[in-house]
Image (tube, rainbow over all chains, first blue to last red; front, side, top):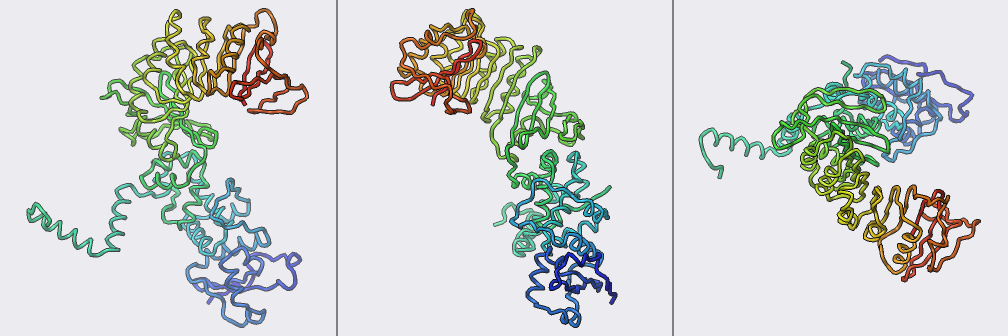
Length: 201
Length: 329
């Protein structure tokens, strides 16, 4: 197990009340460990609820195993916690399903997201899973900006959009997967057609 | 190319991304596939509007949130079967706010005015054309039928015919499009000695009618109008004409009227109308000059309040240069 003992971002200790000065340990699915301040964790609704439910003391945090985050890898989790540390203490937007009309991407976030699109994709999944509202806002804005001034043909390429035919095929496949009997009926129908039958029934 | 599989994002992030796009990009995205169209439709974009400007080419303007987002320039090719307006060649699209024009690849073959119109009306959930404007002195009457076919079934909010068109064009356009709420015409759609023929357009129950005066318009033509708003440009009504109009309004004529406005009333050698003549024989009260009363965003101070037989009140606002304004309360 590789351990990253230092906090992801330098902690401004003066800004943190003494009783809140506690670092939780998290482990990614590729066994990378991170120490994250309690205040930074508040940016993630999912993690905040989790640590509240666990009720860890300072000793527990040190002595118990790191909290496993099974579906996020170390590279992505590092970005997530860097973001949370940088924005700790900031007001958290209410997650009412709405999207702010104007989303400005701060300089720090822009630099943090100056990554390949594969990692950006994982970062968005992580922000969604961990319910980090503002990180989701800025990362989605970055993806939205990729559309700027593009033609439909260019958008299809940038966003790897399926064609109508591909969407139809995917829909059929999903329906068949849900209802194996439907596939059997269709195969039977095709077979009868091959045999020259005019009517299925 | 820098790519990201947008459809494979979590649902919430997918919708977030679509909502974060500029209006132009949202509308273009809606054209990518049936699924993208449905996705943008589900966003319930606000304040969308669709305008058609017919000049020497056809301009389809799609607006979102009070600024234009997309303008399609579609050339009419009369060689195409059934008079359909089809963009067979590349489509020139003006992009805002990026301030540049781009030409789309021609992968929208057989997708013309009608198809774009239906597409964006559905996406914006707005089954109306906001403005249909005809202008341009070279505009041929043969444009009317294909446009009519393309927009068949759509309600038009404003039909506008500019003054550089012929009376024959105006007449044909007015007869071809009947499904409108507001009518602006800058050209009288009939010969000058047959101004009475205009009455058939004026008696419609419209929201607004705005028409010019070529010197032959009579106050009777205002009296036959059933519109809620009437706007006349350069009318030559005398104070006696206006007095007659007001007396008939008091007795119940123009029952739907909410607003009557004449622009650039000829001043008969004076700066303003003689309100004693305009209101002769009509019971009226002048609203004090320091009054704070407001109706239809107009301050009523100094206006003259009159009453119709059924108790409805209206205020006449004397305006400079002989303009006349009647606001029904």
